[in-house]
Length: 294
Image 1 (tube, rainbow, N blue to C red):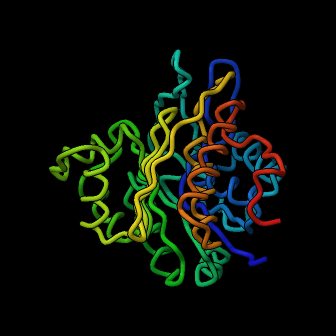
Image 2: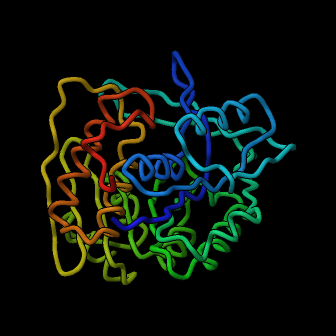
């Protein structure tokens, strides 16, 4: 079976919940799930030399995530976010300013790996600071063979049309959710149904594949001349939605790398995301049945 090197590029942070703290950050969640599905995966981020930074290393090493490309910033705190879970299990976030991942630094290991990467996932949040944004673009430019995956991941006010446009221009694959497509529709004057708006965005930025997740209402994948819609999966137990979208992205990207059909990719990604929703935290243990590379 083919082996793929997959990277999550951006924020490592702690989701501070009412009763616990869980390690997370969308690009790092993606890297974890790609690894859990059978890829060689690596996290590219910056953490502080503080207690949360030390716990980040312990937690991510315990999940067998490669941390050689994670740099240490002694002057800024490791990222964290207050995550409030509403009655539907959906998380809402409040992010502090000027923390370690705002100063994302690419170490030698990250730059040496860049030409070997098969896929790299990046988002919008980590681009709120110019230094981190420039580091993300530098890595993408240094990885010419990689599938560039833009998981929009809009949070609070930390986005702009300029950053979203630049990120889309660099992307091969787009992933966004049903709330985000409404925000983008206003920015780019998209009209019509969700399907029509996604197709307009897909064509406008010459993307290979565009993914719209709809939570319990399923998903839409457009690409390669196809449009695949899948129904959502009703859960008996919903813990929260943290990490579910990232697992969906990871399953989709590995499926694309393995040249699976979009229909099979969609079914598998929806099942995995539903499983993650039934678990606590963004990086739960993933059962063997979900693995794509064994």
